[in-house]
Length: 462
Image: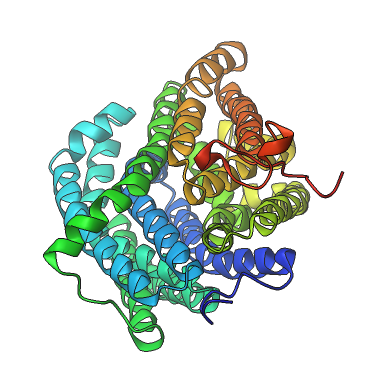
């Protein structure tokens, strides 16, 4: 092993995948669980327009978060690869340059979004009091985007070092802060949506600090890059971050279309969709975390030339996905009635909730295929494959499928169409991963597709 930080080059791969995914998911689920509690509190206020406003805002906030996710993917992949090569200085320098570029661009991006919030919310289908509430909510949260970016990049750097526990604690503490402040601000001070927004901002500052502090304390912080090094690293950062950001932007654009389509069926349908939107990351947080968790494992082993372990990590990640989705779907089905009561859901909101807690939950195995496929592409030198898959899923896999579903079955058809599109592109992602790692010619075994020479995912098991 080149360096003690490169901890994924030996040991049981399924254990690495499971530990990294579960620890990462605990922090993510903490944040998403607070969002879920937010929705419960807001539902308790008895105003459908408040829940609908959160639904509209969620699609736009997802769009802003996508930028931070893309920068975190780039930082994590580059740092993990450098660690796999045994180059500590390169790892610290790339962590620094990724953070600097990310913070500056995030600041500019958040300003552009902030000045166009009303237009964006109107585009989502919001109008009247719901529009005003949605814009007010986002005006408070959007300026904190650069801080969220610091937190996500810091977490990616920690995971690249194999320190999933500290990355988890950062998001977990953010969730605790949000959870404590929510009832105080929403009910205690009577601030309603304003209170929920302020609690979210406080959580982002907590995550930012708690993610960056361990990087400095335990891993030497950042090596101050020279202007020449900033220029040298930019192409490598952009090569992953550019496609990764484009990849992440696809999801909120697809969700925006879904939100717009759902708005045609009234605020009750939008509120139901918002409830489902809060349940999804809580139930499947481990699957969302899997992409960021398996990326460093693949990146370190790829950097060290251990291609058998790269293939094994992908295989074990898929096994983990299948087991988690089945278990979560069963739990949702058993809890569907209490959940409906918890959110005070009525009419169409109940219909959508029961549909999600039934067969549609099982369809998230295909989203797992996409997440793990994206992590593989980003760490094996094919980030544009991730872009292609996500944009295809959110356009060709969303617009026609959702339109057909809405025409045939109304509001429930929107969720059905969205799930069918995900299944189609999940299978396409699997096919592409197998090609990247697959045998083309017998004499070409031993190298990956970056050089055009590919190896079978299952070679050695046949």
